[in-house]
Image 1: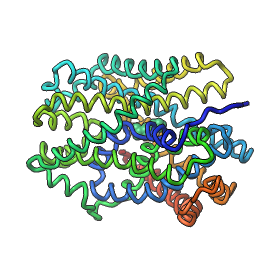
Image 2: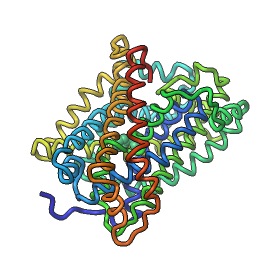
Image 3: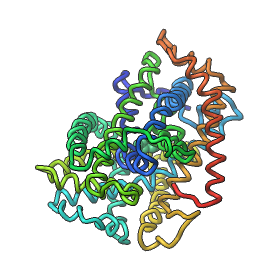
Image 4: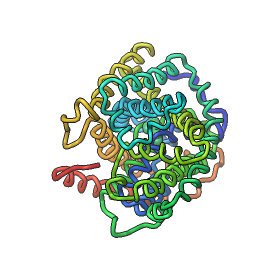
Length: 452
Ligand code: PHE
């Protein structure tokens, strides 16, 4: 099958490529609105605990499985255990569901960037600007098409490497710029309340839904439980230290999400007094709040423009990795050419993306278990499929191939893997038990009234 597999040149190359996939809209758009909605500090705390335990174990397992077999998800699980190929298939469904609606949101970012560049920043501060925009039938669809087109062009032209190079420069700029904006936002009048809400956990706000939301977000943000890290692992050289790579990707990913929260949440308090309705705004939160921050800043239009350009790049590197995954899954599964596979991927994206976009306006009356299309796809992938996949990976790594296999892989070429105990306990006991409990309670929840 695969002969020479191209590989990342070294640790930095691997970490940056994986971080390019991980850091995206999940960090900047999704994390802050979930944190705002699920009680601020308590969500952040749960998220951090999950990231260093569960996220660490799962990412280690996925990358090790990929590196050991040199194959992407479907082949990798099959190779290690014939009966377990289904995990690979299950994993493969996730990016197919995520890609379409990811491009819809990428389209929103594109729209904001274009508006800022063309001098329309001032219009975006109106409270109903965002809602009015996504509620239109045509405009968001055009931007969705632009974003999907950009992603497709990169994949078809095979210029991912070029994009990665550019994003290696842009990512650090994004970090620096975000820190500057965060510091500014924190000192807006009234924002300190938001900083407290975000940093100090209020344990009375703790619920199972918080854990489920944080867990789904962790998978999403770190590109876990969807086969992507298995594929990245298959390109990783044996002499690169796996454990410290995982740590670095996690720090990168969590750091950016943390800073994004530090921009958005204090700003909600500064501009809306942090009332419940404003905090619970959901997917629109970043788009409604950020323009207000930029508007109040000296040189805000320039900073805002730069910010949206950088976010667009972060989103593109993620959508590219998503599309790459989908294209190769379809290609391998149906044994068709790459061009055809690209075509089908775009077709699926349009078929699922159009309702995701229309669900905010013309089709807002259509609900699936109480959700519009976009929220439904988001819910099904993050809160249902990914936990299920993660459960099977834990069982597979913990009981079928055993933690020993993963640890040995991580210790290739005399590398050090220091968290053996943590890894084993989490992957065998803590994670699977937690997932089952959380899934059961969320299903029960869904039978009542379901909200994400
Ligand atoms: N992790 C990316 C983000 O945070 C999203 C993504 C999911 C990318 C799955 C690739 C695969 O935006």
